[in-house]
Length: 190
Image 1 (cartoon, one colour):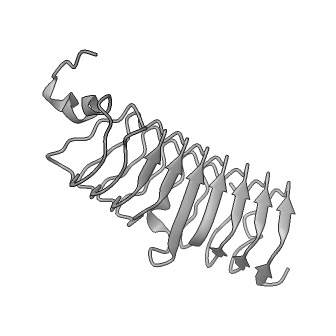
Image 2 (spheres, rainbow, N blue to C red):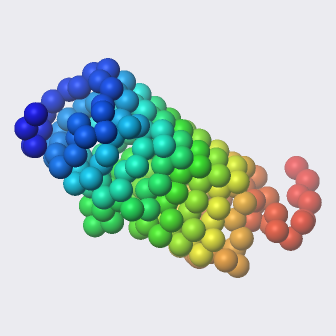
Image 3 (tube, rainbow, N blue to C red):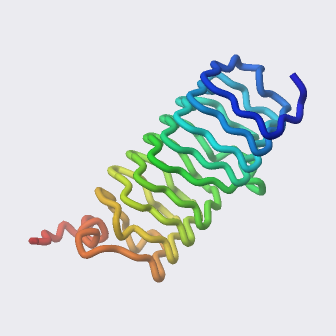
């Protein structure tokens, strides 16, 4: 297999650990593929779409993701903190990202739509301008994060300490205010 793959549609493939090492994919579409066993060393995905793919527990260290769109993918337990930080722009739709880590990443303006983000680690993450559109953020960890201009207005089940995070001009719904007051043990009645 060549090292530069462009304009390909790949459907139903189960990848072995070395299948994608040191390869660049551009404008490719992956449908119903299992990439959970892959070694992502030296891999770049540029303007690629992933539909119903499995990345659960994948070791995605040193992968470049630029313009990658993930729709209905499973990322349970994936640690994003070692991805190529200069080469990272993604969008998630209908994805399961439970127990993932975005620790220390700058994910400015990333869009999460209808995603499960249960127990996600956003410690020291730059979330400036991020849109959490109808996402479940139950037990997500926000500590020393920058969430200025982030939009939480349609998301739910989050708890964010305004004293430990930067939230300037962040958006919340009235229901979401409960998640900002939780540490004070204030009871908000509807």
